Length: 110
Image 1: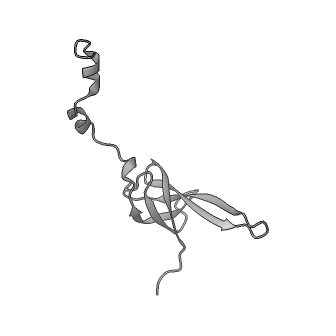
Image 2 (image 1 turned 45 degrees about the horizontal axis):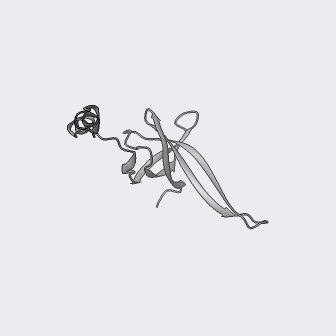
Image 3 (image 1 turned 180 degrees about the vertical axis):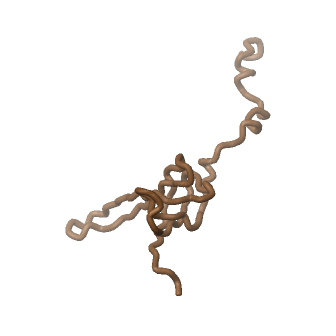
């Protein structure tokens, strides 16, 4: 028998805390009286045991017992990773030729 805990999918907007991420859940609905499409967003703090989540990742969170004063959710699965948020290693950047050395030499610049 599957458990009846709520599951929500959202985007990680902060991972600055240890073993905790902030997940933003966005929803859109039509206003019942005026018919305008209204968007709303909620933020939940979720437990991330291995600090595996990065900013921009799509995750599924599941409700759990209270883990702290504000943390009542646990990251169940990372759906997709945002590769644009990851930073390249410094060693890879130092191997690439830089344009600053070419521009600083006045004899070669015309």
